[in-house]
Length: 64
Image (cartoon, rainbow, N blue to C red):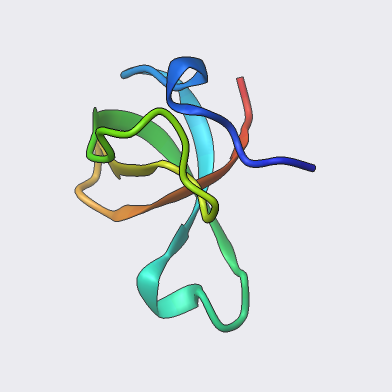
């Protein structure tokens, strides 16, 4: 499944991200987008976002 593009992501959206420390295992963390940190429209590893709780990671899935 391809990673979501920047146009598919917006603040308030529930997503699953992979945190930097979880990249080797691929463990996903669920949360709500607060800020979009990647300025380019796409990224091969996912768009980097900050969640409402302050965690930063790359979006792998959109929950809804």
